[in-house]
Image (cartoon, rainbow, N blue to C red; front, side):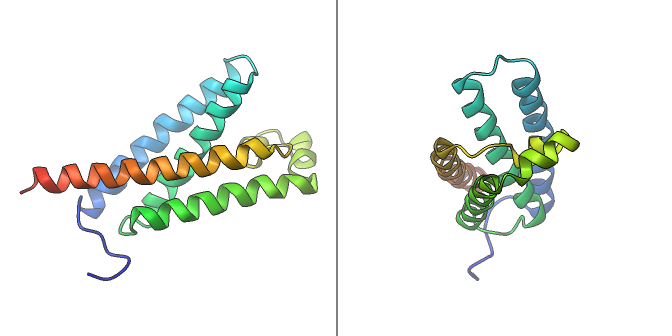
Length: 139
């Protein structure tokens, strides 16, 4: 087996599950952002949902990738976006076009780096477990 190939769900099913997951995750993210009060808990929940959405998006684009690589790219993307906030550009752009804040955030928070990393690791573990269960069921 090559390094990028994966045994498990067929590619089309994996993509469908990931797309459905993105829809649910974005809906949950909108709920957290627009309905819940702005607290540390809602901020962390929003961060986790952002990581989930990025992970699922990568899984849609590269369904044969091993979960570890999806998780690594997810963490790198999320951390890069957080570090980009140090430039002040996302906040300035968000003042002109508010939806950009949903993708790029506004201000740097070092806690987010930990949340992103932990969430990406958790998703890799969940994805690997789901693949193992699917492989056992298909036997």
